[in-house]
Length: 137
Image (cartoon, rainbow, N blue to C red; front, side):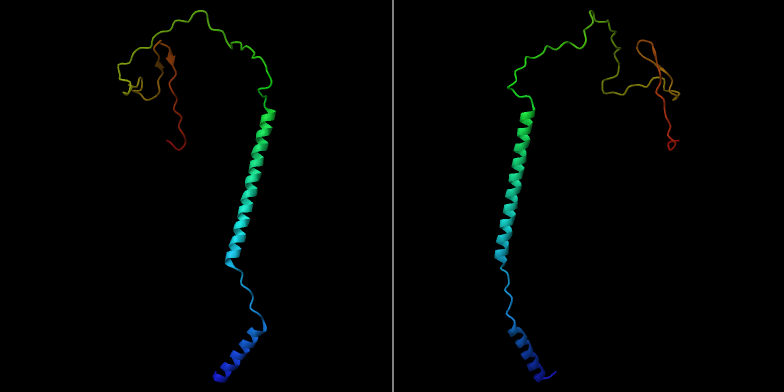
C-alpha cells in the first residue's frame, strides 16, 4: 500500500462520514435523573398500596370482632369437677442416701436381662424391654 492508496482511502472515509450527521449521544445525567424519578414513583405507589391494605385489614377486623359497644353481662362459670370431701392419705417416699446430683445405683441389673423391680409399696413393676434393631446386633 502506498501513499496514493492511503489518500484515496482517507478521502473515502471523509466522504462517508460527511454524508451522515453524527448521532447524538444521550446524556448520562439525564438518564440517571429519569431513572431516579421512576424509582421514587414506584416506591411511593408501593407505600400507598401497603398503607391502604393495612387500613383495610384493620377496618375489617374492627368491624367483624364484637366491639365494646355491645354490653353483655358475663355468665358465671361452673366448676369443671368437684373436689373430694376428704383428701386420701399418702405415704411418704423413702429418702435416698445419695446426694441429689449423685449417681443412682441400679437395682436388679446384675444379670442384664431386665428383671422386674419393686417400688416402695412392694408392687412389682415390669422391667423395660430392650428392642434390638436389625443393624444393632
